[in-house]
Image 1 (cartoon, helix red, strand yellow):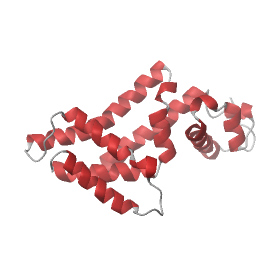
Image 2: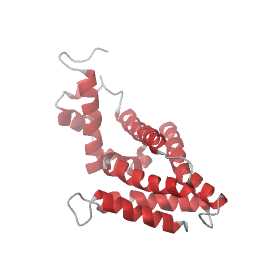
Image 3: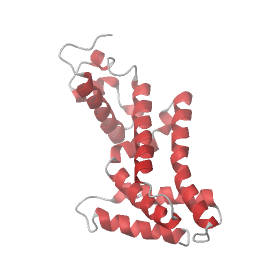
Length: 195
């Protein structure tokens, strides 16, 4: 299928995803129509199908891109080695990455229920890969005798929940800046596991 005359897939495609992400975060996946997404981008509803086969594929693609980006960024940021240093880096990384992508984080966490089974399975696999990161750090810390947790899996999940929670209340220009929040939460993360 040919693209509409005058369009640029390298520009319009990302604009479609950005508009959908904004609308899904604001109104919820179920409440947003393809027509609304097209209007937000400034293209006809029919033209939208040149960039995505349907709304479900658009949601799954957005979630996949977010989670793959998250995993790739952590691989690049992971200092390796000392578990305490890694936990500190992970806490700061998670907050920084998520604050810069608040709509994507909201959609990735709140719209799992909207995924069809095949897409859900793929996205859950990516989520589990990321959730394994703090578990692995805490497990290594416990093995080295520098951390303790009665349940490593639960500790990992608690760390992610605590760190992701920053997105619900943090606003730039507030009482604490990002660096201060990162430092405080990294300290709390270490405290959670007795580091």
